[in-house]
Length: 134
Image 1 (cartoon, rainbow, N blue to C red):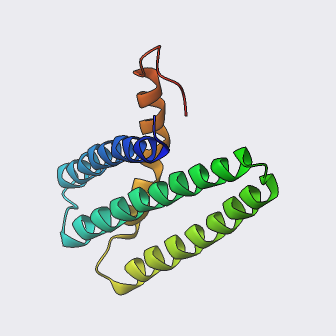
Image 2 (image 1 turned 90 degrees about the vertical axis):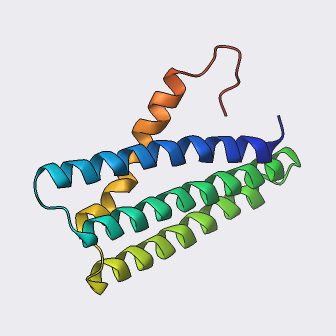
């Protein structure tokens, strides 16, 4: 399978899981009577940033694997390290700006980051036996 297809497929799975998680979080806020526009905006911004972070991580990992296959292991490692630093800085700046703006609820802004690992775990559980784990 083409590496681009794998990246888009995995990102789609993460996007679906994050959307379900954000919807559940919004529902919990509504049940607690704490739902307002800041919760909605925080959930949306946090969800979008989580999906973008995963997409760029998967894309960079794919590029690093291609470099490693071409016997440029050091270049692949440097690409991963640099990408991680840049992704974390951008993620921090955007989420910090969203929290400081007053338009986003801080918890709703950060909570979608917690939905990635359970989504991956559930997706792996339902993965077909013949599919390669990537």
